[in-house]
Length: 194
Image (cartoon, rainbow, N blue to C red; front, side):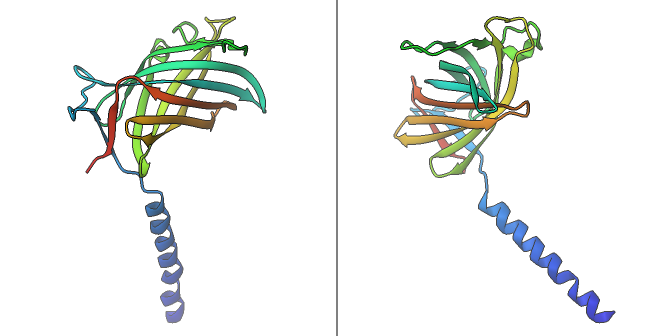
């Protein structure tokens, strides 16, 4: 009995060590977003804006149901949270079917019209991940309930003030979203929050 009670804590100690090592391996750090001139972003009176242009695909069971060219503008606070202020989806000039549009607040909660940006964190050098809500209506039925998701978007600074945004995520409803955008517009700084 005495020996057994001395041995049981060892596996618990090993398990605790493994959990601590695993959690430190995927450490996520807060960020600070600033204007290029170093001014702090304030969502209420001086937000940082990030524009992005690229492509978004939706698929179900491997079948593409929407292939859109997309452009959006996001207003950010200094902690990287905020919301999408403008979003456009359209057909590719050289073809491609984009039967989706941003939700209009009919058939879904009116709050779904504004896409929130939350949980912005640094995951590696020059790499930030944020979670962004989106809601898309079928263009043929804009008053329907739409497609809803909260997808992680990875932002990588590929050169000074040059950002690439990517998401590749399966939503809980089974819809897969694959998007790739290039950052445009006013340069911002996304830094590790020391």
